[in-house]
Image (cartoon, rainbow, N blue to C red; front, side, top):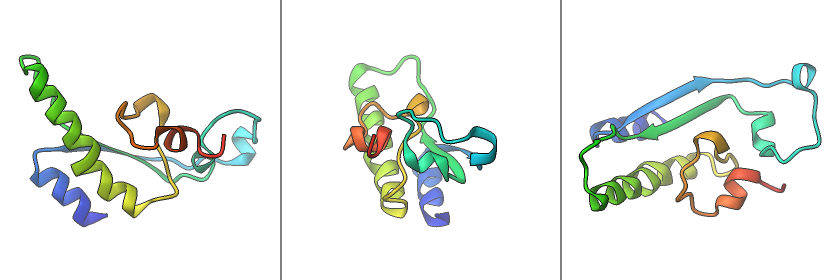
Length: 104
């Protein structure tokens, strides 16, 4: 994880890391479409790039690809059974149905 974070930072990215620990005692186990991995998650980690209000559409698409593949793929390899937090999800997430909803 440290190497992946270092690679993201060295490639111009930034990250947002939040410690979370949901519990069945607090939230219960409602019958909803929440990604099952979120019921036992310990962190929310989001790689991103600084936003440039003056970037061209081509630059924006290149940046999106960088976040999705250059930053995202090593994270998916580190935690293949995790997924994406839907409210902060990458709209280009490969296999998005599984990443967003798991078996739901």
